[in-house]
Structure formats: structure tokens, C-alpha cells
Picture 1: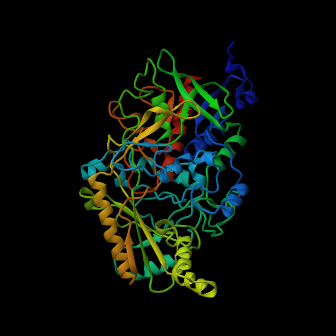
Picture 2: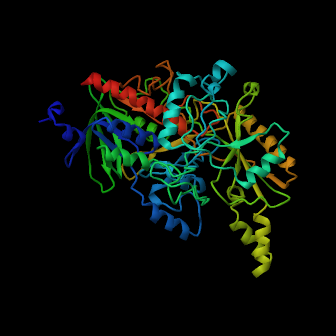
Length: 559
């Protein structure tokens, strides 16, 4: 017999009912990255019964750091168990996880673990610009958001407090603020200051970037120690990751089920989700029931689950009457460039990014080509040329040994510069995630196929970025200038379950609630109608906190 939750005591309501075959709660959150963790923490703090499903395992930081230090090849996946970063294999082996069916490979990765991709994210948290929310109205292309900057602004401040933001409150960088940053900014690196000094009279102004990284001890976490391994791992957790809010959610009564994958969302006759089918890593399975389901996977896994949940009442996939689930996949294609400074600039120290240039994030040019956000990398030429390891290999091949080798490595690495630009990408319906008809994973779910291309508007932005990089290097009297001819992936998986005002053209309303299935909310960057140039995490967090208010109000009405 089904239990009457209205008769449970307060303590019982805070603890989900579990058996060998089912789980019952007020809210089921699928995914434990920043969107899911923040939503779960906020709702659990109100005494609601919250369950979190996470496909990946818990990660012990000290073990991950030891693994990273001992790894012969240090990359995004090296600190983590092999099965937590399956999508990363796609970069070297493009058919391993994603079946690439488009003219260009989709190269951005994600991590399957408690805390999600925030384990190896950069930590930069600029806000969107007001114009980013009204791209079509202002410039005649792309899509407008169903909410404006002024609506999200207080939630940006809330998100900055939750994540622990360090930034310069005296310069809003084009995004007006009503509250200060919780902490002073992370200082600019020596390299950044040298670049900025060379550009004093130019149109390129490099300022400290807002970061979810402690500049002082904060929220029981230490200040940044400058280890320079923020990607793929902060050893001391000065950089925020979503395990912070997973822990807060659990402390408030939420129950986390790691290594548990939601495989199917079942609807009742009224079109409401009645149960969620799941499978654990040990092969056992069951059904979970909740009043509200919050899908917080990412721009690939969220549409994958929705498409896999096709059934009689949703023949093209759950919440997909608009045919927009999986469509409009976006990233921030990256133009990567490198050069050698005439004198030492001392990279390889501190956070990987401490300064950015905002001057090309908006302007009348956006009617013709994409906007861009320019970053100075503090990792030498690690991204572009796999330095310093490649430098050592080349010098040894030239016959250098001993002190001569040391001096040569010192001379080369101390002068390395790397600049990248994240370029705006338009939402294109044909750029999409679909289900692979032939390949299935260990849970029996279809793998994804991805069609991806870079539109002419974004290609023009990439060319503008290359020209800007050349200007910057020239101002520094740099030599050996090079540009990657192909765009890199930024790791910003956006679109695919977009929000909007028209149920025929969008999946979610302005509160991230499904138009079709009213007890389904989808949080994360999959909801973005357009991507602007800002790293998406702060906007993900702000939208999740805003959605939590709607979820709370809806639950109150259901009770």
C-alpha cells in the first residue's frame, strides 16, 4: 500500500523511503553538478525530502591528486577513474562515446562523478551582458531569452554568494550589479600585467576575471595556493566545485545515490511523470517516485534521457512536442594562438586564467560576426603544444643534456604566451543530439549521435579573434606567432532543451518548467536559448536558484 506522506513526522519527511525496488521523495534531482547540487541544497534546506541520482561515483580529492601527480600524461582525465570521464576519450578517439555525424567534431567533454564537471572546470564566473539576453531584438539574429538581465540580476548576486566569488566590485564590466562580490579579486599574474602594460593605449583592456575561487579563507575552504593545476584539479578546494553543495544538501537531509543512472521517465495518463526507472552500477534496478523531477544532467545527457523516454503519450520523447529536445547544441568555439615574448613573462604559476578582455564581447559588429571573450593563459603553451613536455622532448632530440638542457628549458618556458578567445555561437536547429540506433551503453541506453557544425557568423568571429590575437602579440613585440587553424572546444555544452515563451518553439518556460510535463524542471546550460561569450556556470547557478523558488511554490500548491 502506498504510504500517505502527509501523515509522516518531520524527521520521516526529511528521510526518503527506500526499499530494494523503489525510492520515494518530494523531489528527485537527476545529476549532481552545480545545477543539481544547488537546487538540491536549497530545497533540502526547507525540510523537503530530496533524492539525488548521480551516474558517477564519489571522488576522494587526495586520491585524485595523487593519481594526477603520478600520471605520465597529465590531462583532464588523469586524476579520475577511467569510467568517470568517458566523453574525454572522444577528443582523441572521436567514435568512442559520441557518434559524430556532422561536418565537424564536437570536442567538449564532461565528467561523470559526484560534483560533475566542476571538478575540472576553470572557475571563471563572468555574468552575461544585458544584450546577450536580447540578441535577436538588438542584432537581428540568434534568439532572445524569455527573461531579461534585470530579472536574473538578483539571482546572479545570490549565486556569487553561494559559490564564493572573488572579483572587483568597482568595475561591473558591462553587467550592472546591485551587490558586491563576497571577496576581493584574485590578483593578476605577472604575465597578465606585462600583457596589459603593452596594451595601455590600445582597445584591448585586460581586467581581473571574476572567479569562484577563494582569495581568502571562506566557507570553510582555504584561499587559493596558486598550484596551477586548477584544470584538472584544485588540490585544496579553494576553487569551488559542486561537492560543496552536495554536502550541504546531505547535511540538510537529502539522500545521494551515486553510481545510479536514471534510464526512463514514465508518464501517467495525465502526462505527468509518475516514476523514474533507474539502474545502479551493480546491475540492480528499480523505480523512484517523486512529486517533482529536476533533470540536471547536462546538454548531452539531459536530452538523451528525454529522448530515450519516448512512450505512447510522448512518441518523440518526453516533453518534446516542440521537436526542440536535443536541438540547438552550442559551445564557445575557441581560437587558440601562441607566441614567444622577447623577455621572460613567467607562466605556469597561479590559476590558469586571472585576466580577460571584455572589449569585444559586445558592439555593433555583432550584426556581422560573433562576439568574443579574450583570455590570457597562465599555462605557457600547454594547451596549444603540450608544453613543457614537448619542449623537453624536442631539446633532448637535439642532443641537449644536463645543465645545457636545464638552461634551454628555462629560457623557452619562461617566455611562452598563449591567448585564447571564446567565440559566441548561434543556436542552429541542425546542431543536435540524437540517439544512436545501433550502440548502447552498460545500462542498455542508446549512446548519442552528435551533428555539429560552426555557422558562418561564428566562423567570422573566429577570424576576428585571430586578428585580435595578432594585434596583442605585435604590441608585445612577440615572435614565433602561431594560430590553431581549427577551433577547440571550451567545455561549455549549451542549448538542446531551451527555454522560451512559445511552447511550439521551446521546451521550457521562463522558470525552467516543461511546457508539456508540468512536474519536470530542467536546470543547467541545456536551457540556454543563446550562449553569449560568458563562461556559463554562474548563469547556470542563478537560473537553478530561481527555479528552486518556483519548485517550492509548486510543491506548496500540490500539498
